[in-house]
Image (cartoon, rainbow, N blue to C red; front, side, top):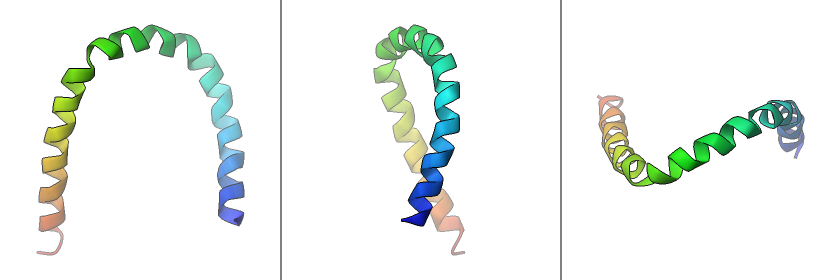
Length: 59
């Protein structure tokens, strides 16, 4: 429970930056909606790379 309280304090500082970035996010949301299909393909490639890293560690 103590760890969760510490995280809440950090979020308060992040909320100030989020207020400043709200205008930027609103502009980027339109572009993200069009590129959702392209981003899904990139995520599949990243998952394959993560599996290879896990195999190298035990070696």
